[in-house]
Length: 85
Image (spheres, one colour):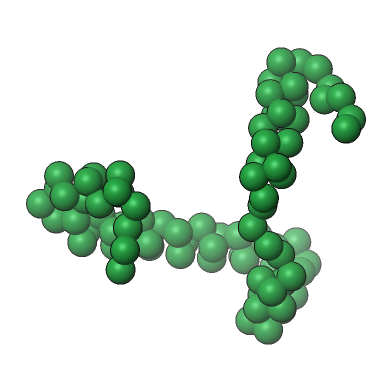
């Protein structure tokens, strides 16, 4: 497994890095289970096949999309509506 330098440095400073990794992975697993339960409670039928299909359709944000989201958030936090582009 390869890790970004900052993460590797953080783990190197802790005597029980496996516990830190385990805790982080379990927290991520719990967030996924919570999201799934909330969606199912709202009436969505979640299947493993459907999740796999959407993973194939949804792509990570581009740098341009991230910048636009930050611009939009900054405008909202400043109490104004973002200007359309």
